[in-house]
Image (cartoon, rainbow, N blue to C red; front, side, top):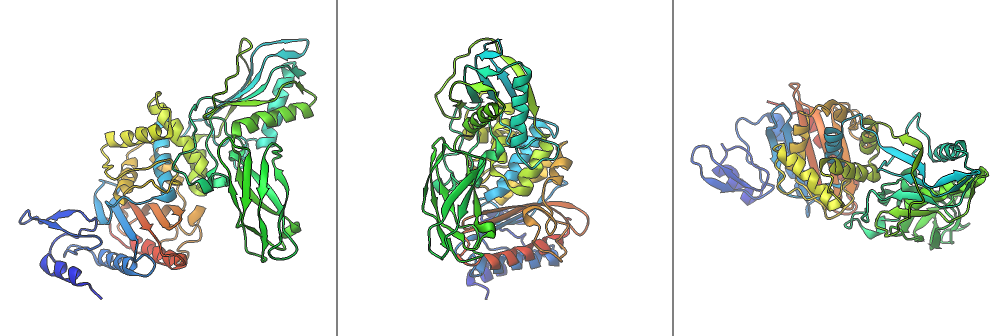
Length: 524
């Protein structure tokens, strides 16, 4: 049923352009400002049938039980000239979830270039005499989030990387280290985990904090043995990789078969005590069930793991390993001249961005934010300053960033927000950058790949829409590009905020309909 307010507005200004952003509109004939409260839209005779149908669909979605108490926002912008063709609540600042990664990765590719690579250096200080190093071994990171990852063909995982480093030490003629093995993350002196991330996320793999020396994507797996009956305690079997310095308070119990991962790991950066809560399913394969957690100090783990590898390879290490940087005040005095033993280069940035957008890895996005900001401004020292550098970059390119208030690079922060207009403004401007084709190809294809692989299959949207998904509690979001019926490339952003609990499936169906509605639009 059409509301009285909507009816009156439609009757009074039926010939005006539609306005869906909640801001003032101005009649071309009179110049009179007409205040329109969201989500009212006002059709014009020039609107295509496809546009009218899509906007009606959005209004019905907004009025549905799914998001009746929340907000639906949509911006559609023509890439060729940046003209916004549809703006429904498009200037309301809302949580973006992981769609923010598109802005982070676009900025990184634009500033650093697709061929940029991180370099991680293994070096020693001091002197070598009679096969004994009177000095320290150090692994110096520059922020590479992929160091030791298993995702990249032709690049070593953490096990192979440790063996490579151990071999470099032995080739230098070192059979004993009288100093320390140091995990050097001093490039970032601050506590790099954003302060707005939910505390309950920090111990889980997706809440793994950034370090200048990351390794194995800063995660480990913890294996549980479920109890024999529902409600029984589940015991901890082991971790992979081995992290014996971590201690666990285990409160995990056993649930019915096939109930999946319900475990939450509660921890904090630089703290080796973690709490395990939740449930694991009964009758798991091989009677064990694994869950991914975050390493509280990845630079320390890198040093510890190398020390263990050296000992395994009969290279003695006399002193406990240590980490520096990442908010710690610890420093390690140099024992003498620094000598490089090995330099490792990451996969090119284009591949890192592909993984960031396809797999939605928060760690990668945070790393790219900090690295890009340092390239833009060498004085940047914190996550907040890095966000400020990103904002200034796009402002200088003429993008309207009113309402753009991110607090990280990944969208995990529940207090960060942006407008749909911000997103499409940056996406359309990115099309003018030399790295655009690379960027475009890193965005998953609806119905085919990444986190949108199973959406809108068998519809006109499948294979046409490229979209990054975003999801945090009560929020669903998508942003990217599609091709209109006349061949025009379009940028879009959909933000759905404060979803009514238990309506996730209904929301997914509505969003799939919106994808189909988008690809039916004309670009002119």
